[in-house]
Length: 365
Image 1 (cartoon, one colour):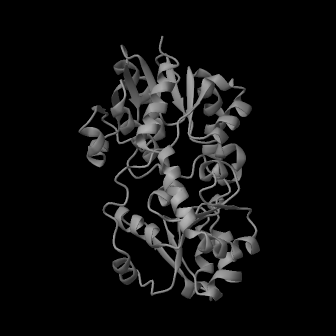
Image 2 (tube, rainbow, N blue to C red):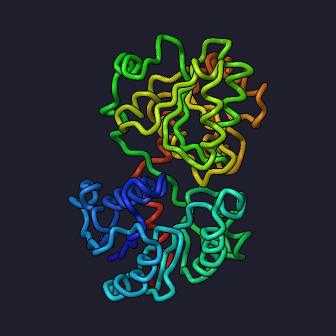
Image 3 (spheres, rainbow, N blue to C red):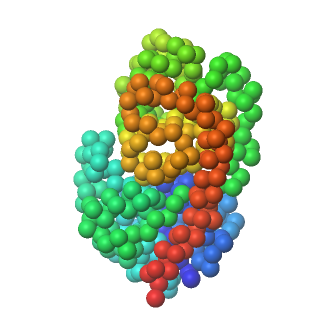
């Protein structure tokens, strides 16, 4: 089965978790009968040698940073080059106006419908116009969780048999190059106190403000440090000033973007990975933490209970409830670590690739 995979939207380092999601899926195809050809933006092969060395790759002349240029190229440059394939997989949530059939579309989430206020007027207008049309054009749709499947079916009137759950896959070598804890504590001046880690950009729905409330009311007084890693998002204007005031100024470490080695090491060394997000299509850091042997504490919103199952602590977004949750987590630490490692077996690149191949087969006649 020859599949053309449209990744022209996948600007390395600029599209967040959707890049990692699709990269790991494609890597999982290596164990299937699928022969993918990846159509990628300029510069992508150098950023992803693991894909370049395994699969055929066609690099466009554009770097993918301009949506207008990309949309035009999908209906012209990409269309001309994808004849003769068994199907075309569009991994970025939209199907071009001019496209080949059959078509598989990946929809990562419908956050724009749940939290429209988090988007600019221009982007919201674009998503409201293009996403429903794309979902109806597609021969089939791939989503990361049952939660996203239900939202897609309800929002766009898509029959359930057209939508396939293709879970995220965790790299088997995750953590192999993790920075040692002692080095991280010295490098980032973390001291000897236990810490919890939250890897996320400061977008409003991620829950940074909620975590700071928990720190102020409960965790800081108990000697717990909060480590924040990730870039600056739309909620930065509210979060940054709070971090300058006591007790947060001395109990929260804001590290920004860190290397993959440092990120893995911080998660592995943490008492817990905390994830109070209001909305996620998947929540990959939860599975990555389990793979690294770290218990997780997350909210009960969107897909997170589905992803965590019984391998972590799921709590409502109540400050006092979260304040006491660390005690329960510490008491059950060994049990949760074992449960997490067992659950990770459901979220490997091989499992993800096999699910994607099944989605392909569902529309190839």
